[in-house]
Length: 549
Image (tube, rainbow, N blue to C red):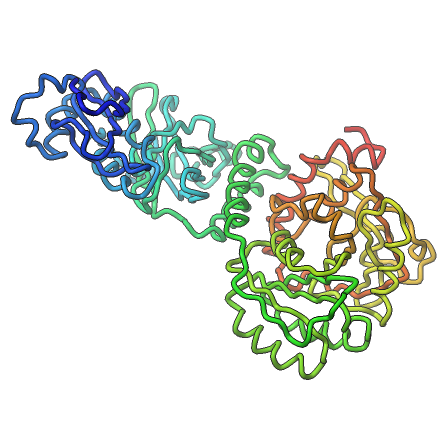
């Protein structure tokens, strides 16, 4: 192949007949078929491997003619390797359409599954979720009653092929009668879900395929519906999958759900940023405590808190930061705040995130604005029982050496205890450690709940910690979803660093609990968070609880 005058050409042989080159602008050989600009300004081209002997008329061919002449005659496997290698080189949206065109021009068309009762085999691609530009989560089902499935692959719109043989298979009982399986107890594990990571990237909303081949050589293909790009919708779908098994399945969680959630949470962290910060009232000059309060949807709770804060003069001298994690409510919140400050005269700031980022990230964003040496992370549905609580907490915190986090007594509205420190329990037959609250449900005056003491964990609903320590620990971890177990994770990290977490009952507040999220939204996230927390801290928790691992 002639590359004279183009010493920087980078090439990869796709087949014996075809090569893929990345060339400096203007340096591509005359017979090359351009696909477009690649990263760094180089031009990506296809060329015959024997380009030095290319007939003159081939230099005038367009891409489609080039593919028909040089690629179409190859075997199906060789043609697939051309589109697969091209797709792996795609690292931006510019080349996505040319790569799709190559895939469609050279790929082997397989029969589509047509639903019919009694059919021996079937294949459906239910959904493809975009986690980021190169990571995806696929769901569907594949079944063959006559022969073993020996190949199950996904094909990106650009042509990259991904093996789905390691997908998690789950039961779909409703398919049994459809395929003539009369035994009601037969477990038809036809469903599949799979986390996949491409070598290249994919930027098109349509065109994902799933292909299946059995041991007899019979093949099917299924076209997936339009890609799900909305991260909130993708997160909801992924979090629903652990419920397919009664107990958390390690293969399902570790190989598929966890990497999918990590990509989605990482995506949320990357997009973390403030849209606006608005001050209401004159900011205090030297606050002792920065109170960081995330808001999600229930902006009405701001007035509930300010109506209590105004009764405590100490609160007006502190740095209060509301962080709005539902930015669609920005206009309503700012309008409400503008009416509330003249009424209650408690200064505060409203920080609005660019997009929903979750409990941990909202707290971390608020801490980034904090002006005081002590932090109080506080939920929007936590209300003080009486004035003086914050001063008492701050004084106790400063009096303790090697203190990590400090939590007050939290109460239900009927004066029973919601929180007096947290430990962990694992029910019989369960594999996951769950948090448990000391003295929960007992009356607030129960003697054992009125003694300050070290505890493993305190609730993030109302948690005091020094700003310096919080920063050194890296804050709350965004790997957890919505708002469960981030507090336990932080407390255990501080404990591992030699700190002691304390429960302080002299400060009492009411916690209305979980007003921002319904139980239907919280349960899937809680299930995942509990598994992740156990995976991270299970051995340490077993030591704390004196249990066998």
